[in-house]
Amino acid sequence: MIHRLVSLLILGLLLSGCEQAAPKVYQQQLFAFGTLVEITLYGVGEDQARQAVQAVDAMYQQQHRDWHAWQHGLLTDLNQAIAAGKTIRTDPSIIRLIRLGQGFERSSGGLFNPAIGHLLKLWGFQQDTPPQGPPPPAAEIRHWLDTAPGSLQVQIHGQEVSSENPAVRLDFGGFAKGYAVGKAVELLRSRGIDNLIVNAGGDLCVRGRHGDRPWRVGIRQPGTGGLLASVEMENSGCIFTSGSYERYYDYEGRRYHHILDPRSGYPATGTVSVTVLTEDPTRADAAATALFVAGPGEWQAVASRMGIQDVLLIDDHDVAQLTASFATRVHFEQPPAAIEIVQPAP
Image 1: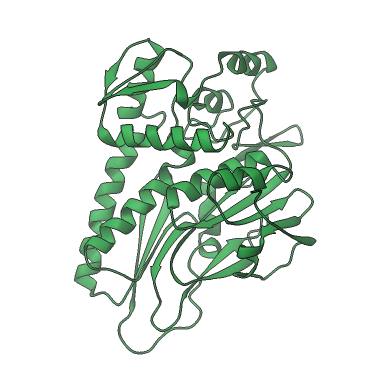
Image 2: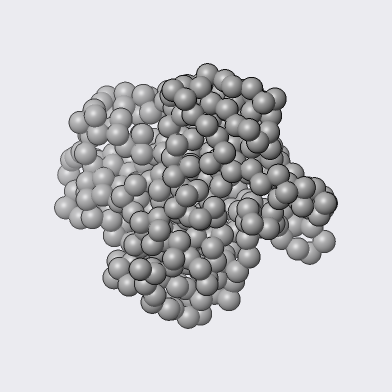
């Protein structure tokens, strides 16, 4: 996710102009979950703001340790136990994430699958350095498909977790950042801060206003680093984007990105980016991935099942498909080749 830092200013807060009178904007950056997290607060004293951001940072560092998919922590302990056919007692935060992931797997029809950790490892996306070399052998992908791991195969009894499928390897990367952003918003609100943005590498939540006007945020132009569109966020909302340009590697003239289709074992095709706007950041994070995998022909039905109304999808022909409700809120700064207004399936 480090490469997303280049687009942070574009995907994040667009502060057009400045206000000369107090209260002022307080901004601070943290590093967590492999990306920069920018916290912007309005109308808060510096001491209050600094202490609140320090509390968010402490929370994030703990979450990073506990939920990391390949560095040793609670999640790796759980995956090792599942691989060995053992039952393990784990932390309530892990239980919560498993249950959330199972719900997203159900509602997406399996297009969002938080048990594909081993497949991500095969493709080289479970390591700190970018992948290199050829894609995994087709035989290894077929073998993974034959094992058919899914989070719905995980059993939870109190704080004890097990699975009868040793191929299950949980990876919360598809939605843990959204969950963490939501927790940061909750923490800041509990400290009396009502006007804020928490921006994790371009995926963000907004609460309140920037003085006498709404917050204004941007959506990145896929692949160029420019600005595709902007949205005014009134009172509250979260915008999350999944794109093929986020994490990828090239081999022999072909690009392989990290959004894998659990039906085929290969990177999803047909889509360049999906942006989701909703109140729940965890759902937004998971839905952006699921709709990307669903692709231009199927995403409407998946969005409906996942309870998502505001969607912008850019396909690999630079055609924008967006819902009518989102079309009323978005302003294209660099219009795509074509724009289609669609509705989620009933």
